[in-house]
Amino acid sequence: MYDDILFPTDGSDGAAVALEHALDLAELSGATVHVLYVADTDRDSITVLGGQVVDALEEEGERVVRETLDTAGDRVDVVGEVVQGEPHATIQEYAEGHDVDLVVMATHGRQGLDRYLLGSVTERVVRTSPVPVLTVRMDEE
Image (cartoon, rainbow, N blue to C red; front, top):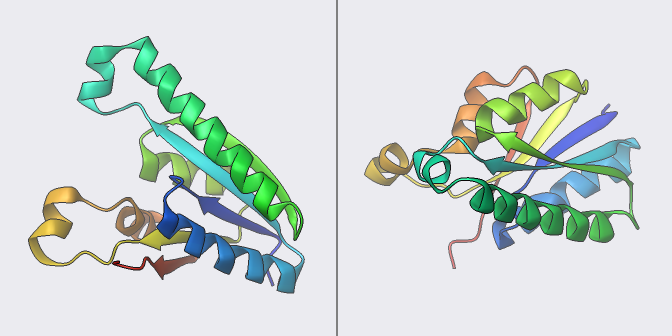
């Protein structure tokens, strides 16, 4: 069914809910879970502030990936990576470059103006992904 499942994460509690779905699917199919943290270095505010902020983003990403690997490693085969870039494009490139069969992501479930003003990495991945995307709605609490 699935050999490689991509789990992009920002380390949020909502992402942890999606991780459980990714791990369950990986257990059922014997898949490897790819944990990906994208350090969003394409924002103007990051570019202006320079190297220290990029280093901080990467350090946060390394922490998130390490914690996720520790959690998931007891259940399935798992690999992790921190990559700089624009999140939706980087997720798509990773999926294509690693022959991923499925992407599992959390979504805020925003509607109306919030969705258009804030944008949605998950929504953009759903629209552009070369493979199926399973979205898991975060708890709003």
